[in-house]
Length: 165
Ligand SMILES: Cc1cc2nc3c(=O)[nH]c(=O)nc-3n(C[C@H](O)[C@H](O)[C@H](O)COP(=O)(O)O)c2cc1C
Image 1 (tube, helix red, strand yellow):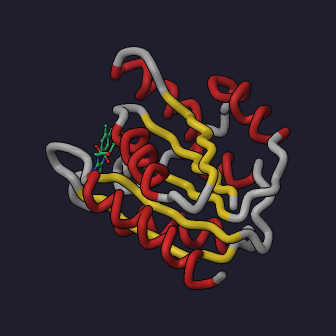
Image 2: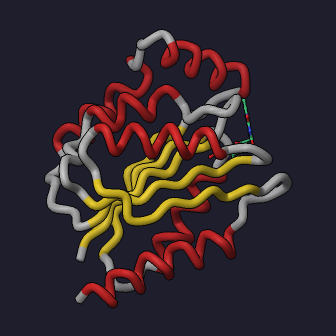
């Protein structure tokens, strides 16, 4: 079984969380597709402002690689941070670039306090694209990412698969 974890990060927490989830999914070969913002905080904010205006030129290279991905995954996981109570604008563009019609999907957000709205928006977006959501989680960590919870989430996805087969 194959899984793909597509994540976006600017502070590194969604990357760590994705790695831990993937490490728990021992029944799967897990691939990662990262969108990582680098540079100063100001640069990251400015890139995200561009994205909000619909200009994704800063991540177009990654997006075009996503277009080319051979879509034979049993499961795709989208991992997004919560910024200002929303997923990054790039999330919507990423979903447009992957065929997830009738695809099993899991979603998660990393956040400090809120994140509920982010998860709801993510759910709505992937459902509208035709995906079947099998799991979702919100990892609330104010000081550090909730990696134990992330591991359990990965295990639960792994066990769900074992029960199915
Ligand atoms: C600009 C900015 C806005 C944020 N807004 C929220 C928010 O509205 N709610 C929340 O719970 N956490 C918020 N956070 C905290 C992030 O969601 C949290 O640190 C997340 O894990 C960051 O993910 P990343 O390290 O993958 O970028 C915000 C962080 C930043 C930098």
